Image (cartoon, helix red, strand yellow):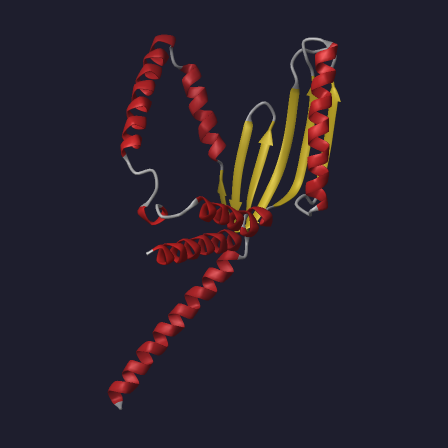
Length: 219
């Protein structure tokens, strides 16, 4: 009896730990991942999750500024070296397998189903909290500026209205004008996109289960 009691206690603790981990994972998945995109001559990308903040665009801008500060000959030498390294890398990638082994047996129909899962459980869960765009469309002459303005507005406003009607956009502010006094267009914009981490996890699990089922049926 003592042995059975010990074994029972061990299994009880294991079950308790598993339940606690599942509960913590559930709580961790509820908060939203926030992606803030901003453009004002330069693209800025910020990621926020709980108390964590990431700014990948900051490092990109620092690298660009470093390249501008380098001398001409040195920069050309580095560019040549970069091109040689890139060619070598592409050759090595061609030799490697394009797809993992567990995805080799999938058909075109299977990939279409995977894309449907991605859209249904991830893409359609994305929400645009706010969308701001200000554009001044210009061209080499008045006719070209007017033509560009017509094309942009004919594409932009219907898409925004459709996304708004479907509930993807909570708040939008768009101001597009034509500028006949300049030859260069100007754009400014900012948007905040949110997605719950649990949606990403559910999509990944669904895709994994679907692939495993297809592979087991093809054996």
